[in-house]
Length: 377
Image 1: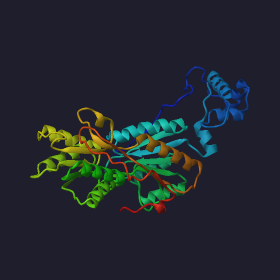
Image 2 (image 1 turned 180 degrees about the horizontal axis):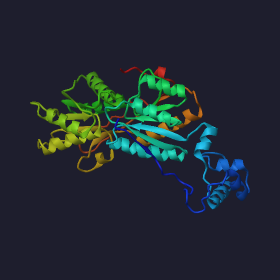
Image 3 (image 1 turned 90 degrees about the vertical axis):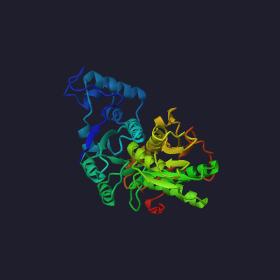
Image 4 (image 1 turned 180 degrees about the vertical axis):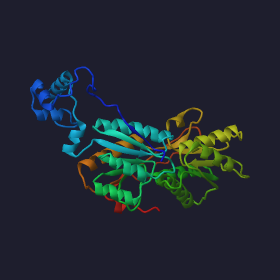
Protein backbone atom coordinates (compact mmCIF):
# COMPACT_ATOMS: atom_id res chain seq x y z
CA UNK A 1 0.00 0.00 0.00
CA UNK A 2 3.01 2.28 -0.09
CA UNK A 3 2.97 2.65 3.66
CA UNK A 4 5.89 2.72 6.02
CA UNK A 5 5.76 2.50 9.79
CA UNK A 6 8.22 4.39 11.97
CA UNK A 7 8.58 4.10 15.71
CA UNK A 8 9.91 7.20 17.39
CA UNK A 9 12.91 6.17 19.47
CA UNK A 10 13.85 9.36 21.34
CA UNK A 11 12.84 9.52 24.96
CA UNK A 12 14.28 11.39 27.92
CA UNK A 13 15.92 9.42 30.72
CA UNK A 14 16.17 6.15 28.79
CA UNK A 15 17.81 3.34 30.79
CA UNK A 16 20.68 1.13 29.56
CA UNK A 17 19.97 -1.24 26.70
CA UNK A 18 20.80 -4.96 26.67
CA UNK A 19 24.52 -5.41 27.11
CA UNK A 20 24.93 -1.84 28.44
CA UNK A 21 26.82 -0.96 31.62
CA UNK A 22 25.45 -2.83 34.61
CA UNK A 23 22.84 -4.72 32.55
CA UNK A 24 21.43 -7.87 34.13
CA UNK A 25 18.63 -9.90 32.59
CA UNK A 26 17.43 -11.25 35.95
CA UNK A 27 16.92 -7.95 37.81
CA UNK A 28 13.40 -7.34 39.08
CA UNK A 29 11.43 -4.44 40.52
CA UNK A 30 11.90 -5.98 43.97
CA UNK A 31 15.70 -5.89 43.59
CA UNK A 32 15.56 -2.20 42.71
CA UNK A 33 13.24 -1.51 45.64
CA UNK A 34 15.60 -3.18 48.09
CA UNK A 35 18.67 -1.30 46.83
CA UNK A 36 16.83 2.04 46.83
CA UNK A 37 15.23 1.25 50.22
CA UNK A 38 11.74 1.99 48.91
CA UNK A 39 8.58 -0.02 48.29
CA UNK A 40 7.99 -1.94 45.08
CA UNK A 41 5.03 0.38 44.40
CA UNK A 42 7.42 3.35 44.50
CA UNK A 43 9.56 1.68 41.83
CA UNK A 44 6.48 1.27 39.66
CA UNK A 45 5.50 4.92 40.13
CA UNK A 46 9.03 6.08 39.30
CA UNK A 47 8.69 4.58 35.82
CA UNK A 48 5.12 5.75 35.26
CA UNK A 49 4.91 9.20 33.61
CA UNK A 50 2.73 11.62 35.52
CA UNK A 51 2.55 9.51 38.68
CA UNK A 52 2.80 11.06 42.14
CA UNK A 53 6.24 10.45 43.63
CA UNK A 54 8.70 12.63 45.54
CA UNK A 55 11.64 13.84 43.39
CA UNK A 56 14.22 12.40 45.82
CA UNK A 57 12.46 9.02 45.77
CA UNK A 58 12.39 8.96 41.98
CA UNK A 59 16.08 9.87 41.89
CA UNK A 60 16.93 7.06 44.30
CA UNK A 61 14.97 4.53 42.24
CA UNK A 62 16.56 5.62 38.95
CA UNK A 63 20.03 5.44 40.48
CA UNK A 64 19.37 1.93 41.80
CA UNK A 65 17.99 0.90 38.41
CA UNK A 66 21.09 2.16 36.64
CA UNK A 67 23.34 0.37 39.08
CA UNK A 68 21.53 -2.93 38.61
CA UNK A 69 20.86 -2.49 34.90
CA UNK A 70 17.11 -2.77 35.44
CA UNK A 71 14.68 -1.90 32.69
CA UNK A 72 10.89 -2.04 33.09
CA UNK A 73 9.16 -4.63 30.93
CA UNK A 74 6.74 -2.64 28.80
CA UNK A 75 4.96 -5.77 27.53
CA UNK A 76 4.36 -7.12 31.03
CA UNK A 77 3.18 -3.72 32.21
CA UNK A 78 0.73 -3.43 29.32
CA UNK A 79 -0.79 -6.80 30.18
CA UNK A 80 -1.47 -5.57 33.71
CA UNK A 81 -2.58 -2.01 32.91
CA UNK A 82 -4.23 -2.76 29.52
CA UNK A 83 -2.24 0.20 28.16
CA UNK A 84 0.54 0.06 25.59
CA UNK A 85 1.51 3.73 25.98
CA UNK A 86 1.66 3.84 22.18
CA UNK A 87 -0.25 6.29 19.99
CA UNK A 88 -0.60 5.99 16.24
CA UNK A 89 -0.36 8.98 13.92
CA UNK A 90 -1.73 8.36 10.42
CA UNK A 91 -0.44 10.96 7.99
CA UNK A 92 -0.47 11.72 4.29
CA UNK A 93 1.00 14.88 2.74
CA UNK A 94 4.34 14.54 4.52
CA UNK A 95 5.83 16.61 1.71
CA UNK A 96 3.84 19.56 3.07
CA UNK A 97 5.99 21.55 5.54
CA UNK A 98 2.90 22.28 7.65
CA UNK A 99 2.35 18.60 8.44
CA UNK A 100 6.05 17.86 8.81
CA UNK A 101 6.21 20.56 11.49
CA UNK A 102 3.05 19.19 13.10
CA UNK A 103 4.58 15.71 13.32
CA UNK A 104 7.66 17.04 15.12
CA UNK A 105 5.53 18.89 17.65
CA UNK A 106 3.29 15.87 18.19
CA UNK A 107 6.31 13.68 18.94
CA UNK A 108 7.61 16.17 21.51
CA UNK A 109 4.28 16.73 23.26
CA UNK A 110 3.14 13.10 23.28
CA UNK A 111 6.47 11.80 24.53
CA UNK A 112 6.38 14.34 27.35
CA UNK A 113 3.17 12.57 28.45
CA UNK A 114 4.86 9.17 28.32
CA UNK A 115 3.58 7.95 24.95
CA UNK A 116 5.54 6.35 22.14
CA UNK A 117 4.61 7.44 18.63
CA UNK A 118 3.92 5.00 15.80
CA UNK A 119 3.83 6.78 12.44
CA UNK A 120 1.79 5.30 9.59
CA UNK A 121 2.51 7.09 6.33
CA UNK A 122 -0.07 6.68 3.59
CA UNK A 123 0.03 7.74 -0.03
CA UNK A 124 -2.38 10.27 -1.43
CA UNK A 125 -4.55 7.65 -3.13
CA UNK A 126 -4.55 5.22 -0.20
CA UNK A 127 -7.44 4.81 2.17
CA UNK A 128 -6.74 5.62 5.79
CA UNK A 129 -8.87 2.62 6.77
CA UNK A 130 -6.20 -0.02 6.13
CA UNK A 131 -3.58 1.91 8.09
CA UNK A 132 -6.06 2.35 10.93
CA UNK A 133 -6.80 -1.39 11.07
CA UNK A 134 -3.06 -2.09 11.22
CA UNK A 135 -2.67 0.46 14.02
CA UNK A 136 -5.34 -1.39 16.02
CA UNK A 137 -3.28 -4.59 15.68
CA UNK A 138 -0.49 -2.85 17.59
CA UNK A 139 -2.85 -2.33 20.55
CA UNK A 140 -2.37 1.43 20.46
CA UNK A 141 -4.09 3.51 23.13
CA UNK A 142 -5.29 6.14 20.67
CA UNK A 143 -5.06 7.31 17.05
CA UNK A 144 -4.48 10.77 15.56
CA UNK A 145 -5.40 11.15 11.89
CA UNK A 146 -3.90 14.10 10.01
CA UNK A 147 -4.22 15.23 6.38
CA UNK A 148 -6.49 12.28 5.64
CA UNK A 149 -10.14 11.34 5.93
CA UNK A 150 -11.78 8.60 8.00
CA UNK A 151 -14.83 6.54 7.10
CA UNK A 152 -17.77 6.32 9.49
CA UNK A 153 -17.43 2.52 9.52
CA UNK A 154 -13.86 2.64 10.80
CA UNK A 155 -14.73 5.35 13.29
CA UNK A 156 -17.36 3.02 14.70
CA UNK A 157 -14.90 0.11 14.81
CA UNK A 158 -12.42 2.17 16.80
CA UNK A 159 -15.18 3.09 19.22
CA UNK A 160 -16.05 -0.60 19.63
CA UNK A 161 -12.38 -1.31 20.45
CA UNK A 162 -12.36 1.49 23.02
CA UNK A 163 -9.63 3.31 21.06
CA UNK A 164 -10.24 7.09 20.82
CA UNK A 165 -9.58 8.84 17.51
CA UNK A 166 -8.87 12.54 16.98
CA UNK A 167 -8.88 14.15 13.55
CA UNK A 168 -6.23 16.87 13.29
CA UNK A 169 -7.04 19.86 11.06
CA UNK A 170 -9.87 17.86 9.52
CA UNK A 171 -13.41 17.03 10.53
CA UNK A 172 -16.00 14.60 9.30
CA UNK A 173 -19.73 15.06 9.48
CA UNK A 174 -22.16 12.70 11.18
CA UNK A 175 -19.62 10.51 13.00
CA UNK A 176 -18.71 10.21 16.65
CA UNK A 177 -15.05 11.24 16.24
CA UNK A 178 -13.11 13.96 18.04
CA UNK A 179 -11.74 16.69 15.80
CA UNK A 180 -9.56 19.79 16.16
CA UNK A 181 -9.17 22.16 13.23
CA UNK A 182 -8.47 25.72 12.19
CA UNK A 183 -11.60 27.58 11.12
CA UNK A 184 -10.96 27.72 7.40
CA UNK A 185 -14.35 29.28 6.63
CA UNK A 186 -13.49 32.27 8.82
CA UNK A 187 -10.04 32.44 7.22
CA UNK A 188 -11.52 32.54 3.72
CA UNK A 189 -13.95 35.26 4.74
CA UNK A 190 -11.11 37.28 6.29
CA UNK A 191 -9.15 37.17 3.02
CA UNK A 192 -12.22 38.21 1.01
CA UNK A 193 -12.84 41.20 3.27
CA UNK A 194 -9.20 42.24 3.17
CA UNK A 195 -9.05 42.06 -0.63
CA UNK A 196 -12.26 44.07 -1.00
CA UNK A 197 -11.23 46.65 1.57
CA UNK A 198 -7.88 47.09 -0.20
CA UNK A 199 -9.59 47.75 -3.53
CA UNK A 200 -9.05 44.57 -5.55
CA UNK A 201 -11.97 43.85 -7.87
CA UNK A 202 -10.90 40.80 -9.93
CA UNK A 203 -10.35 38.14 -7.25
CA UNK A 204 -9.30 34.60 -8.17
CA UNK A 205 -9.07 31.38 -6.21
CA UNK A 206 -6.83 28.31 -6.63
CA UNK A 207 -8.51 25.42 -4.84
CA UNK A 208 -6.95 22.50 -2.97
CA UNK A 209 -7.86 18.81 -2.85
CA UNK A 210 -11.69 18.72 -3.09
CA UNK A 211 -11.81 15.69 -0.78
CA UNK A 212 -10.36 17.72 2.10
CA UNK A 213 -12.63 19.66 4.43
CA UNK A 214 -9.95 22.36 4.67
CA UNK A 215 -10.06 23.00 0.91
CA UNK A 216 -13.84 23.09 0.77
CA UNK A 217 -14.13 25.42 3.76
CA UNK A 218 -11.50 27.90 2.58
CA UNK A 219 -13.23 28.25 -0.76
CA UNK A 220 -16.70 28.41 0.79
CA UNK A 221 -15.73 31.19 3.19
CA UNK A 222 -13.98 33.18 0.47
CA UNK A 223 -16.70 32.87 -2.17
CA UNK A 224 -19.58 33.40 0.25
CA UNK A 225 -18.07 36.59 1.64
CA UNK A 226 -17.33 37.95 -1.84
CA UNK A 227 -20.96 37.33 -2.76
CA UNK A 228 -22.19 39.06 0.39
CA UNK A 229 -20.19 42.09 -0.66
CA UNK A 230 -21.55 42.08 -4.21
CA UNK A 231 -18.59 40.45 -5.98
CA UNK A 232 -18.02 37.06 -7.60
CA UNK A 233 -14.90 35.13 -8.52
CA UNK A 234 -13.16 36.47 -11.61
CA UNK A 235 -11.40 33.11 -12.12
CA UNK A 236 -11.14 29.73 -10.37
CA UNK A 237 -8.51 27.02 -10.80
CA UNK A 238 -8.16 23.54 -9.35
CA UNK A 239 -5.08 22.33 -7.50
CA UNK A 240 -4.35 19.63 -4.94
CA UNK A 241 -2.21 21.54 -2.40
CA UNK A 242 1.09 20.63 -4.12
CA UNK A 243 3.56 23.17 -5.53
CA UNK A 244 3.27 21.54 -8.96
CA UNK A 245 -0.52 21.84 -9.06
CA UNK A 246 -0.26 25.49 -8.03
CA UNK A 247 2.20 26.15 -10.85
CA UNK A 248 -0.12 24.50 -13.39
CA UNK A 249 -3.13 26.50 -12.19
CA UNK A 250 -1.11 29.73 -12.20
CA UNK A 251 -0.14 29.23 -15.84
CA UNK A 252 -3.78 28.77 -16.79
CA UNK A 253 -4.85 31.81 -14.77
CA UNK A 254 -2.16 34.12 -16.11
CA UNK A 255 -2.78 33.00 -19.69
CA UNK A 256 -6.32 34.42 -19.69
CA UNK A 257 -7.15 37.56 -21.64
CA UNK A 258 -8.12 39.55 -18.55
CA UNK A 259 -5.99 38.52 -15.61
CA UNK A 260 -7.09 38.68 -11.99
CA UNK A 261 -5.56 41.42 -9.86
CA UNK A 262 -5.47 39.24 -6.71
CA UNK A 263 -5.50 35.50 -6.06
CA UNK A 264 -6.19 33.53 -2.89
CA UNK A 265 -4.53 30.10 -2.90
CA UNK A 266 -5.81 27.32 -0.63
CA UNK A 267 -2.34 26.80 0.85
CA UNK A 268 1.10 28.40 0.91
CA UNK A 269 2.81 25.91 -1.41
CA UNK A 270 0.42 26.75 -4.25
CA UNK A 271 0.76 30.46 -3.48
CA UNK A 272 4.55 30.23 -3.64
CA UNK A 273 4.30 28.43 -6.98
CA UNK A 274 2.00 31.19 -8.26
CA UNK A 275 4.55 33.85 -7.28
CA UNK A 276 7.36 31.96 -9.05
CA UNK A 277 5.36 31.45 -12.25
CA UNK A 278 4.10 35.04 -12.32
CA UNK A 279 7.61 36.47 -11.95
CA UNK A 280 9.74 33.98 -13.88
CA UNK A 281 7.46 33.00 -16.77
CA UNK A 282 5.19 36.03 -17.20
CA UNK A 283 7.48 38.84 -15.98
CA UNK A 284 4.85 40.19 -13.60
CA UNK A 285 5.41 42.30 -10.52
CA UNK A 286 4.25 40.99 -7.15
CA UNK A 287 2.12 42.66 -5.86
CA UNK A 288 2.02 45.44 -8.48
CA UNK A 289 0.48 43.28 -11.21
CA UNK A 290 -0.85 40.46 -9.04
CA UNK A 291 -1.41 40.19 -5.29
CA UNK A 292 -1.00 36.66 -3.89
CA UNK A 293 -2.37 35.29 -0.62
CA UNK A 294 -1.84 31.82 0.88
CA UNK A 295 -2.97 29.79 3.87
CA UNK A 296 -0.89 28.03 6.59
CA UNK A 297 2.12 30.33 7.17
CA UNK A 298 4.78 27.66 6.68
CA UNK A 299 8.39 28.73 7.31
CA UNK A 300 9.29 29.56 3.65
CA UNK A 301 6.32 31.96 3.47
CA UNK A 302 8.37 34.52 5.43
CA UNK A 303 11.45 34.19 3.20
CA UNK A 304 12.23 37.52 1.47
CA UNK A 305 11.84 35.97 -1.99
CA UNK A 306 8.16 35.28 -1.26
CA UNK A 307 7.14 37.64 1.56
CA UNK A 308 3.84 35.81 1.41
CA UNK A 309 0.69 37.32 2.88
CA UNK A 310 -1.19 34.41 4.39
CA UNK A 311 -3.57 33.08 7.02
CA UNK A 312 -1.44 31.73 9.85
CA UNK A 313 -2.76 28.51 11.33
CA UNK A 314 -2.11 28.32 15.12
CA UNK A 315 -0.05 25.15 14.70
CA UNK A 316 1.37 24.95 18.21
CA UNK A 317 -2.06 25.43 19.77
CA UNK A 318 -3.69 22.96 17.34
CA UNK A 319 -1.18 20.29 18.33
CA UNK A 320 -1.52 21.13 22.02
CA UNK A 321 -5.32 20.88 21.99
CA UNK A 322 -5.22 17.64 19.97
CA UNK A 323 -2.69 16.13 22.39
CA UNK A 324 -4.75 17.14 25.41
CA UNK A 325 -7.90 15.74 23.81
CA UNK A 326 -6.44 12.33 22.92
CA UNK A 327 -4.88 12.03 26.38
CA UNK A 328 -8.16 12.95 28.10
CA UNK A 329 -10.10 10.52 25.89
CA UNK A 330 -7.74 7.70 26.87
CA UNK A 331 -8.06 8.53 30.57
CA UNK A 332 -11.86 8.84 30.38
CA UNK A 333 -13.00 6.01 28.14
CA UNK A 334 -16.42 6.47 26.63
CA UNK A 335 -16.46 10.25 27.03
CA UNK A 336 -18.51 12.35 24.61
CA UNK A 337 -16.78 13.39 21.40
CA UNK A 338 -15.45 16.95 21.15
CA UNK A 339 -15.19 19.15 18.07
CA UNK A 340 -13.03 22.23 18.53
CA UNK A 341 -12.19 25.03 16.11
CA UNK A 342 -9.34 27.52 16.47
CA UNK A 343 -8.99 30.80 14.63
CA UNK A 344 -6.32 31.73 12.12
CA UNK A 345 -4.63 35.12 11.84
CA UNK A 346 -4.04 37.30 8.78
CA UNK A 347 -0.31 37.93 8.37
CA UNK A 348 0.35 40.75 5.89
CA UNK A 349 3.65 40.70 3.99
CA UNK A 350 4.83 42.11 0.65
CA UNK A 351 3.01 39.72 -1.72
CA UNK A 352 -0.33 41.42 -0.95
CA UNK A 353 -0.52 44.70 1.00
CA UNK A 354 -3.96 43.95 2.39
CA UNK A 355 -5.95 46.06 4.81
CA UNK A 356 -6.36 44.11 8.05
CA UNK A 357 -9.88 43.50 9.27
CA UNK A 358 -10.20 41.64 12.56
CA UNK A 359 -13.68 42.59 13.75
CA UNK A 360 -16.52 40.14 13.38
CA UNK A 361 -14.42 36.98 13.67
CA UNK A 362 -15.98 34.27 15.85
CA UNK A 363 -14.02 33.21 18.90
CA UNK A 364 -12.44 29.76 19.28
CA UNK A 365 -15.27 27.36 19.86
CA UNK A 366 -15.73 23.90 21.29
CA UNK A 367 -18.78 21.84 20.38
CA UNK A 368 -20.09 19.53 23.08
CA UNK A 369 -20.85 16.68 20.71
CA UNK A 370 -20.65 15.72 17.08
CA UNK A 371 -24.39 16.16 16.71
CA UNK A 372 -24.03 19.93 17.27
CA UNK A 373 -21.72 20.48 14.32
CA UNK A 374 -22.91 22.67 11.49
CA UNK A 375 -23.41 20.67 8.30
CA UNK A 376 -21.40 22.36 5.54
CA UNK A 377 -21.56 19.46 3.08
